[in-house]
View (spheres, rainbow, N blue to C red):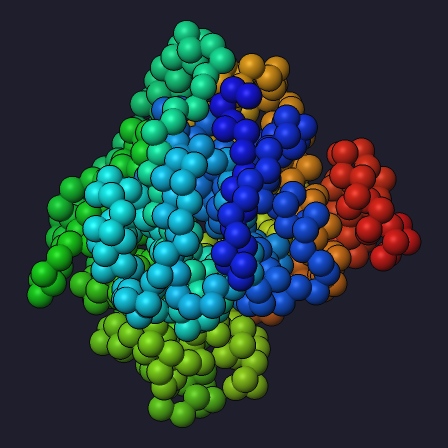
Length: 605
């Protein structure tokens, strides 16, 4: 095979058994790798009703056909599992350098199952795979863990690991690689912790083979030129990082503040990308094979070591969502999230939910909006699963339900929404509602056409045509996540760029249309997994506030989300029932014959 390594590593932690099986050419061409490959493995191998924190759940680390080739932004990897936070199929991907070393070790994916009898870590050096004792690093934060693991393996190894949050099975815990990069959402860290797996270190000496090196070099150069010309990837992201969005989203009245009670934050400039650059930025940071370099190495007074971030979502969730304007406190809370291994979006949003519960008199002694000291302390308590942190670590959905006001949780399928109020970005509302993993802006980034004008600006308040565009972006994004490339590449590149890269690397005659179809296949297989677990239209909704309560101020004032008409059109375009379940004929047309039979047997459709 070209591009792919042709092998899947399997590790049974219960039996300490290491084996491998081939990646078939059919599987590779149908699902590419990354997200798609992981979803295929889980759909076929996980029995219905598998407890996400049981030994029977599986955790898949997957690379893509472009990983390690030097293709622009092809330095990422995906983690796929069943989420303990949402109960849905879940994938989370991360940048940095770990994915490239895993691929160069000779593996397209690592499938981890069972539960180790004691804390363990994996050392993957090409074909040599060891399950090592991790008693001495259990309880360590992610930075210390990486340092120790590299000292015990090789200094050039790349490490992905969990912190104390994952060890304690905290439902909003993440997996951290290269100290600052996160496979951040859905409690993937808790799944890793439930397996007594502290870390994976990888180092490889193999290069993926490229079918047509001359064509690949020419295509990569063409893609880099496109990245260098696009204003977002050329100027905005390199100069200000993702936090360039703070003032942009606030100006249109869609920056959620006070737990989505408002869409405008008066102190937004204090936490903006411009202010970060002026006050705490040390230098730009890039992932493997990336020229955009949107990462920010930062340092705040009183801290011995530097950190990275905060990114847009972290600034929003720990800042505006909680009505906090103290940039240094936000940065410290962000650093702590990375060290404990906590998802910054869910952590900040859950704290904001607690603040609203407290303000409404439903959480005695709870935190107050605007309290900068509180967000830092609450991150610590959450990571340690101590005091109120025990409740916060379960996420806002469970917190709000426990205190009798589920409407205060700004989540979909129990996953906290990111920092875009869909009352001001209608298509984003549909993307949140129909995301297979729960509320997510990255399944289909409708902010791109509705706000940023990429590839063209459309009316953010209208619902016409939003269903078809949302579906298209979701399909393209699923393919991008399976190659595995950075989402930001989509600002500058289109499916034809991706197809040309893939053709030159794999010698498979992919077209742009093929990639959209592959994305549609992956999206439908995810949907079939969720339908098998009982998810349906009832779960494709938004918090009541967004549907019924207009924004009180700003340039999106007096708007709510008109979800139902968009949802009806979306289901029809997808070939799903009015209850949001894929028709068996739709699944069959996509080559998903096993899924078609299972869904047909369950729903008689």
